[in-house]
Length: 97
Image (cartoon, rainbow, N blue to C red; front, side):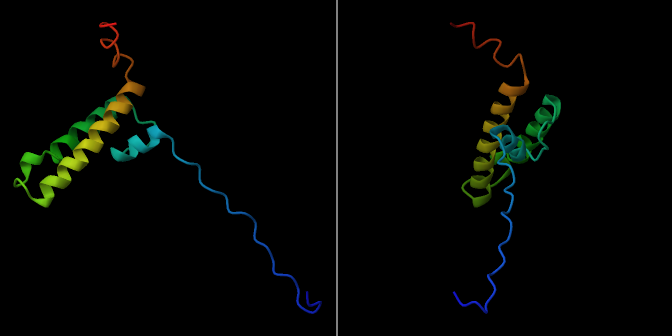
């Protein structure tokens, strides 16, 4: 090392933002803030399902394909949030066991 050159300053480590949990990601798919009530989740789900109905678009178009892809993501997000937020969601699933 050259004694006439001062060492380069080191910067403090950059704090990483917390990684979102799975439910936070599902809220984001529905364009909601994490922690929204189940009633708000259901309302957002219904609105998005209407907007992404593939029959609203000409069959075989890119728009219809995109609507179907978005719809699948919305359905999956809603299913996860419903399971977590609605205590009656699994009420009938245990009957067959």
